[in-house]
Length: 450
Image (cartoon, rainbow, N blue to C red; front, side, top):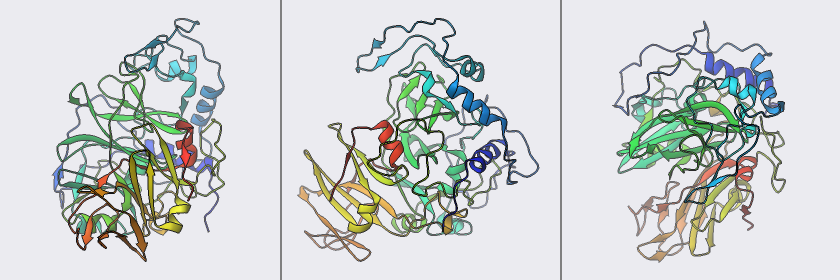
């Protein structure tokens, strides 16, 4: 049985995450690669504490700060009148006045963000508690082979799987929960792997601005309970959920989504025997493997630091598999439906969609020890056309089989047996999110009905 979720505990643990001391230099045993080196040397050092895993005090003054940000009326530092928005070539409207409240202006006084270019009102931003970079990104990720990761990573633990140009990497959520952003390069593609535990949103983006790789970090701010990132070149604020530039020189611009999936460690190494796994040697001391958000995914819970209107078509923390199609159609496939059907064959306009589900992946936000959490399974979303042939799929026990050739497929879209063995389905960018967060940003979403 899941224990009730405590906001006091989670807030204290978030603060503990940002206060934990920097660890010694990473060990080199089993390290197979060092990715992109950090380019920013101005990131504040983390304060040191004797025991970073010690249970924090239940009362924290930063909670009061976030409430003040929410409740204090906004006051424009330079002008009390809002300007008419300027419409960009892509149709995005930009406001050109700094409308920060005194409180937000104080919290961000040392930032170099251009607050006079924005797509939103800053009163939509809340402080999550930790300051900017208080939850530190991983900027010099180290990787090990799966056999070495077995010592600390259970087979059912969730990882973010990314593969480009034959380079396959797994980013365990037991690590991402404490860091939220990894700046990396996979198969020659500079990218950021991001995870917002409050929204259960694992999203990967290209991290190239003006033709150059740029690092990203955590801003310490939230919008609709979702991580707000910033880039360390222009200090523009970016929404993790949508990849949209919110405030700064790049306001109104859009990061490019890249395909990824949350799957189990076992599924990853079966699909990518030559792949590598993000090491726990991050340069920071964290209690990896322990879930500071235990019980957060219990249906019926209210989202943390979310002050928007809930879309009651589904429970707030119901899990949905989400897709945004090129024609701007947004679809949510409830995980409950996938549990029953195993596979969904769908078509939206001219786009055929195949949604897979297999068991064996634990929730990252359930039990205190991630490996002990409820099995929520893993999903994959694909274009089901192979060499001009439209395939349809069915679940046969734990196997996914296409009806046209009888070939067997795995959760990452590889044909592993049968006539089409060796073929790879084209991946469609998708997410495994909590419903409240997706609906907050995509209110016109169609919910799939079987």
